[in-house]
Length: 219
Image (tube, rainbow, N blue to C red; front, side, top):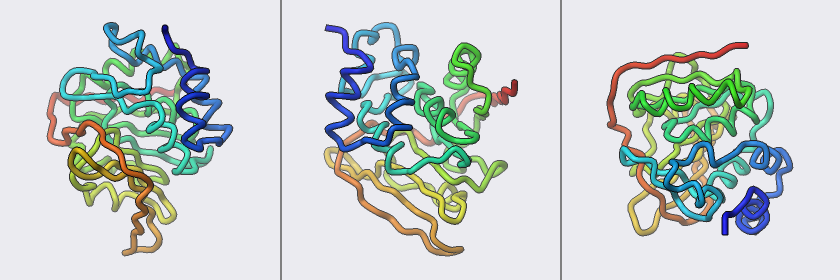
């Protein structure tokens, strides 16, 4: 059986206590299957991580939903995605926030997403190819930052690019047990880390590298 948006939201996401109507509406609006490799189309809405190639994976849908929920994103927020990968999280954020910068060390992920943006009517998403350890200083500070794979440690540069009151979501640690964390910037030199839940997710290879690619689409 091929699962649908409704299966995903009702059977996976609501049971994880995600009830924010903006997040749920956004998950219904964005067709997850267009971000999934052809070989995995039937699994686009399944409760699993999906391999993308190049040592990249998509988070399971409930992880994406929970991240968007706990970050309490507003339409005035400026957001940064570390690891464009499939582009799914970047597009969801573009629907929820004022503007998004999505950074990846591998240009092919940015090229693939750029080709989808016109059809999705997304014009507030900037794509950059750069060292993911360094975030994207040119657009800092950000109200929201998401890392799209697990890391052993959150790069300090990314934390420092949070605006005061800003929130960062990351899955941190080593398999088999990792922690989903929300890091909040409270004052000039104070960040608070909250452990949200235990999980396990594929790593985001922050040291990937490929040629530079820049895309900034405006209507």
